[in-house]
Image (tube, rainbow, N blue to C red; front, top):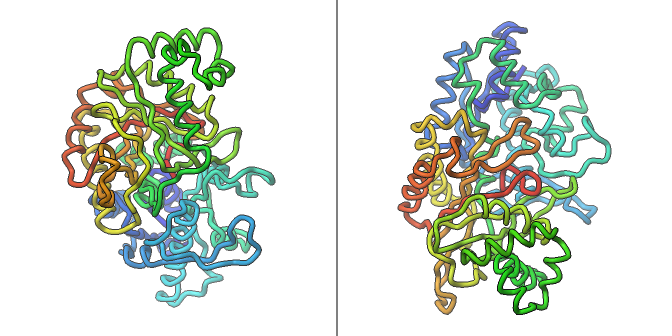
Length: 453
């Protein structure tokens, strides 16, 4: 068995199961550092695996991933095409497929290096049921919609699976059940309770873009978002689109909108970027709305708006609070962003700051997951300035879930995330070079997926 071990809960529990079932010489444990790991993560993974009796073969392959490509069939096309190199790929689905297929290619190279016959080697993975559901695998449904292709369910993996060469002992399990299994196997608590980190790593926590996402519905979306956050004033002035909001809300919700908009000035800004969401069991890939204010954030009011906005605007699947002053300008440009070492290091440093503060405050067991995302948005840039945007922003996504299929954002100021801890994270990340603003994702799942891509 060739076992891919990322060091996360799923692959580690899978490794422990196989270790109990097979002889050590029957398992080739491989940890592939794809260059998208957290700061110092690969060294920690190697040590933790050795501590539980697994001696991994570690392959450092950052360059190969960045320069890698794969073959895909794009929606609406019949022919198979070669993707751009990962370092020049903007589409999140294509990024995921390239990364997943390169994992398989590297494992095949290891088999060749060890002079083994491919047909004599099985690939073992810590695939969970949610991975298969979101990837629309035929193993769980014949007519499901793909939400996002998981790196352990790409076309190359499916080909291996159909030929009987993939072992996935956890494919009927959810995350909470895997943790229970890990406890039964006697694995250390720090391994079992480790927060999930996706196989493609930081590569799918960087929104890559070469131009702003501004469709023909952008202006109307911006206007309606402002009508929602300025409901009291727009109602009095009988704004042309006020009936759109009234028709989509109850009397109680309208009363709340009046209260919020008459007491606090909240600016709604549609960001010209796309993130992945799920609405009506289907994948969405559309706008993000940012909320800003000069006042201290009232998180309950902001969460109310975050639930309402995607319900009224179906082309919005994510709502965030933007720390700092009120956003003055409409955002109509982005900072050209691809996967490169500078951008990866920006996110890696922000991720290290956020997670270190959470661990020091002993909150990592209270928060199910905390993706930290880099978006190609430069706030506070004078739109009359013709020089290209150069800054990017960081989004915090603290999340609570039991099954990792649905969930809610952590409420700032709660026992799960005290206000001072959040303020420390925002303050320290804001000091990083090239960071414009820090945002806080207020979106439940659905409509927003846990990850942004």
